[in-house]
Each structure stands twice: as C-alpha cells, then as structure tokens.
Image 1 (cartoon, rainbow, N blue to C red):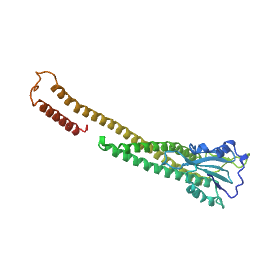
Image 2: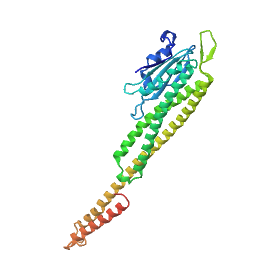
Image 3: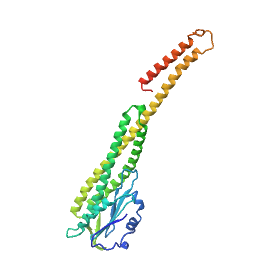
Image 4: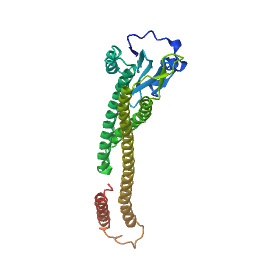
Length: 316
C-alpha cells in the first residue's frame, strides 16, 4: 500500500537529487515493515526520515505501518506503506486533513512534519494503551488462577494466559525500540539538530522554526510518557510470568503430595495383609475363623483414616 502527501508546488520527485541512502530506503522497504527504525537526518538540501506505528498488538506479530518523508523548504513528499492485512484508512484520513497546511501564507513544511509526527504518535499511544489493557487483564487472570485451590487449577486457562503473555512480550519488545527511536527523532528536531541548506552553496537554515520546535517538544514529552508506559508493561509482564512459575511450582507440589498420599494408603494395608498372610502357625489368629475379618477391618480402618488425614491436608 502506498499513499502520498505532497505540497501543491511540489514537482515530480527527482530521484537523482536524492542520496542513495534515501532511495534505498524508499524502495527497499519490505524488511522495515517488521523492524522499523524511526529517524530523521539532513542530506544537505533536504531532510529524509521515517516514522512508524504498530498495526496491531493482538496478533503477537510485530508488524508496522511505515512512513518515509523527504522535505525541504518548498515541498514535502511522504510515502505511507503497510502490510496488506492492515487497514491504513484511518492514518490516510488523518494525513489528508493536513493538506490545508501546505497552502497560503502560513504554510510551513516544518509544521506539516510536526502534524504528521503527531498522527503517528497518536497511533503508537493507542496501541500502547490497548496493550496495557491486555497485559493488565492477563495479570488479573493469572492471579485469580494462582489463588484458587492448587490441585483444581484450570490448566487450560493457565496455558491460554501463558500463551497470551508470550504474545504480549513480543509486542512489548517491539514497542521498546519503536518508542525509544521515535523519542530520539523528536529530540533531534526539538533541539534544532537538523539543518538544511536552500542551495548547495548557502548556509544551513532552520527548517523547523521555533513555534514548530515547541510543538515537537510537546510531542517529545508524550513520547517520554510512552517510554514509561512501555517500562511498566514490561514490569507487569514480568509479574505475569512470575505468577506462572509459581503456579507451575504449586502444581508440581500438588502432584507430589497426591502421589505420596496414594502410596501411603496402599503401603500400610499391604503390611497388614503381609502380616496376616505369613505361613507360620504361631502367627496371631492363624487358626481363628475370625482372622480374615480382623484383617479386613484393620485394612479398611487404616485406609479410611489415611484418606481423611491426607484429604484434610489437601494431599488428595
């Protein structure tokens, strides 16, 4: 998928004017849909860069929609791409609303960049909040299962939650690099680190005037907040995996207790049966017609007492 946002005065994109780094990124983009690296850099007479946002945080696959941009003082061209299974209409709609900014006396390429960056930051924030809710739901679910009776733990539910947590971990790790590099990109613009020349012989000028830098600084604060959210998500996921380990330990302990209880119930009756089954005439009750009954009663009583004892201690 491709979508273009261009200033009205923009000419056809002259690829020969672009550095090979820019052309390679514009056309060799397939890998960037899985592993984007937001950036902005000056190539002398223009700036080149990339923004990205997650397409989904529910599929355990780190796919992104990616926007490349080339801009100078007079024109800006953006290229929006995504995997075929993601609907970019919402982003396209937001970008189309920026076309009014490229006309009139107040037109500013720097302002357009700030607005485009805001669109993508909004998309990242939406994804982060959705992922946060997903992780919190998983954390509550795993706590409820852990706090239930050990040997009656719903193993299927536990397995499903663990699978969801693994998927969330993939999304959180993908979000980590995206948020960090988006923050670095905004820092470069807000601190006036990106300069552009109008011609090859001119001095560098500020493509992003002060009022744009103030807007980008606000976006930078939001990206730092996103960084904190991402860090908290990782902490919550660590708690989810910790509870899963605790449940596994509890389940193993329960199985061990159950095994011990069953063996004990079988062991003592065997001793009684072996005792009364000895082939010695001097054995007690050997000649008595009630010997077998005494043996049966003893075996039954011992088994019942053991069962009740182990049941009360949650071994069975």
